[in-house]
Length: 247
Image (cartoon, rainbow, N blue to C red; front, side):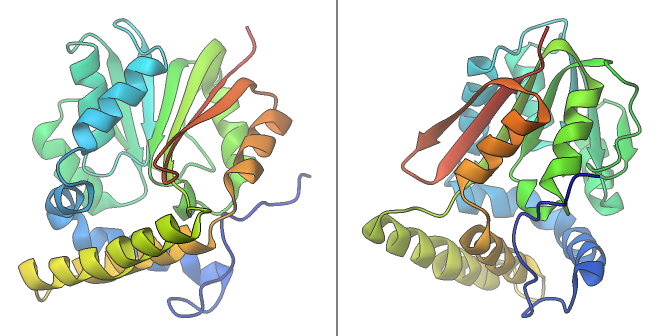
């Protein structure tokens, strides 16, 4: 059996052990689901939809494809996929948070499944495109998750993972730390008091700060059997990992 590859170590500030991590993250996302659209607009300065659409187009998403959006959340990535294909894609969303799925259902007329990325209740070789937006840090094991992604993709199918990486440069790291670690939580606390929004964004920055570097993700994708593995980087922060299942 392949040894697990954790996205980041145990974060004692938030939970005491790996066993406690799934319930902690699920509770946090359940508590913030109704505010997540607003949180995203604050965090991305309104550019999130444009960025997701660009990444999907660059990855070859086109009408007629069957898409599995893992960690669909409130449906931001799924919405972008439908826009890119002008509604002519068969999109299915999956998430562990029931409250996130409830929010997604309000605006998305697509099938939604409650499940986790490490154990996809999806048939082998049944989808053309797997996407995941900013959730790789919240899974328990990169190895088993990537194996599941490869299993459900059809030969020649595409995987797109959007993530945020810890900048390597000192100046950019300082700016990102201030923006994500202090400014965004403060704005969330100001605009959405008595919610868990600020706690969510504080947790986001902590997971980003302690996440495995991009090279580990790229190496594990290749080790899982994906080909054409690469990564686009914007301002040394936003990462779009792409890979293809051999045809």
